[in-house]
Length: 350
Image 1 (cartoon, helix red, strand yellow):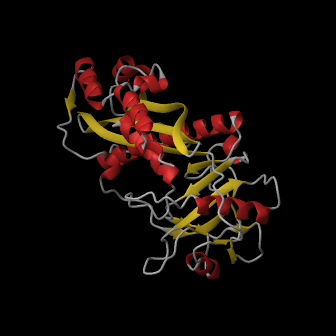
Image 2 (cartoon, rainbow, N blue to C red):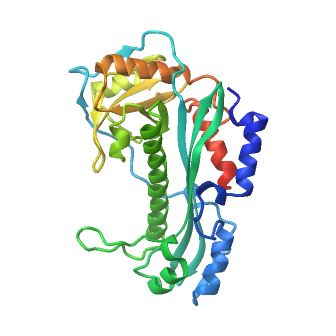
Image 3 (cartoon, helix red, strand yellow):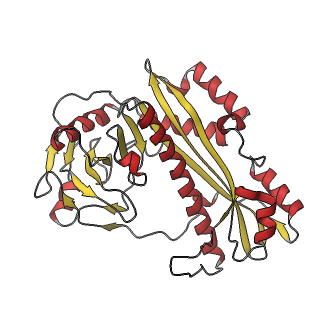
């Protein structure tokens, strides 16, 4: 499985990178932050250009939600326990889906930031041990602006559907205060939501048209059609929230390579319920307790008995632990197919 390392794969990536518009058709003319900045400076009096040289907002330090643990309802065992995944690993995953995002400040209106955001998603399909792009990858370029504090009419007139309001009122009618750091965080979160939307729209298309197993980087509960599909396998690599408390948490953190936890029910606010479990992909000798640990999500509408299905999907995921996704720093939890998707998107979105 040589993925994007093959000559044909690299040719494909470079060709699309040279013409990003070929990916999604008409997405407007502002396909770069520089082009968007020039357009804003010409179209809207009072906008000051950002000086540049700063890293994308995603790389800048910011306050985040503290890590925490949550108890979860068992779906397989009355008490959460470790279960060995029996049987040999099987490479049955047909496709891999991942997304990317990049946000950068391109201008200021007074103290109000104007952010250019790019979101993208792609499915890489395994065909005869190679990874190729399935369908048309999705790329979105937008300007994220707090229209409660910026010239709404001018921005909407200059950008049309490309502008996204980051100060839409909450259900109780309140609007975020004009704190510059808060406005930047809201812009970054808005780009993240667009990235997730693109990812799950592609996942829905795959499940509806192909119905073969697809590994999705992240959870699947944000899209009801994907969450209900038996072909979707979500793999969560980060663990700021751990769905286990007390003795159950000790079980999760103590899993050995090739072991999984009991299946639980997970239904975060605003998302569809899914079945989930923790799976240890690699030996933790000399490593921290989260090394090689992923949380797997599948549909709550299990086509077979829960234990059999969780074991089957776990065997599939264990098979994807080789070849290594190195040199990515997350290689202990990342499948090579997901790395292929990331490399493709890096080549196409810059």
